[in-house]
Amino acid sequence: MNDVIVANNLSHRFADHPVLNQVTFRIRGGEIFGLLGPSGAGKTTLIKILTGQLWQKEGVAELLGTDTRKLTASEHRRIGAMMDHFGLYERLSVYDNLAFYADIYHISRTGIGGLLKRFGLYESRKIPVSKLSKGMTNRLSLARALMNDASVLFLDEPTAGLDPATMREIHAVLKEQKERGTTIFLTTHNMFEAQACATTWLY
Image (tube, rainbow, N blue to C red; front, top):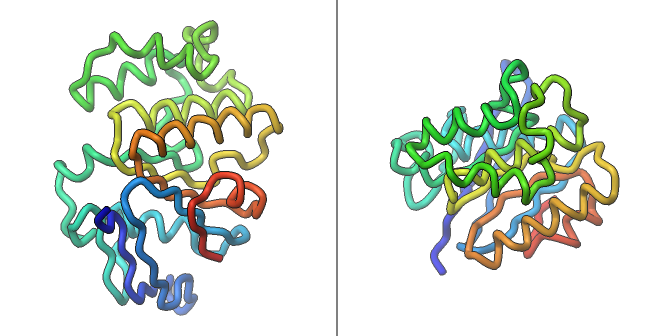
């Protein structure tokens, strides 16, 4: 398979504080790539560069064959992202959050019920996100990331602070996505998680 994500000597800094220093790797289609590192190591910054939210100071990043500084709506429609509950609206219900994104992606709402059942959230579909537990919120964030049937998933610490049962549920979903050919970029500070899920990993 071709390389789906490429980083070549990526460096970035905020003011005089270096965050990334000549990071280089390639991720082929259908891989689960684990990026390990403690909090503050630059993992989230790297995801923002790879998804075009932030431009690096040095080096080149490519996603789906395109320079990440030149990503278009076509590439963004093929990306799913789960980043610290980014994109969830606390005042909206569980169902309405997914309905909102279904409308943005121009996809039918008919699959929302099945998605909520898959993640154990159907009985809570009318509850505002602000009332959910951390584990339920994480599951909803992952469900949202999967809504557009993305070919590339970026997951930033998807199981941080979760109980073992919820972690296993999320790991099972990731393996299902890999079997479907989805490329997954996973950040974690947990070596055991990387070993359990990732095809390759970088520390």
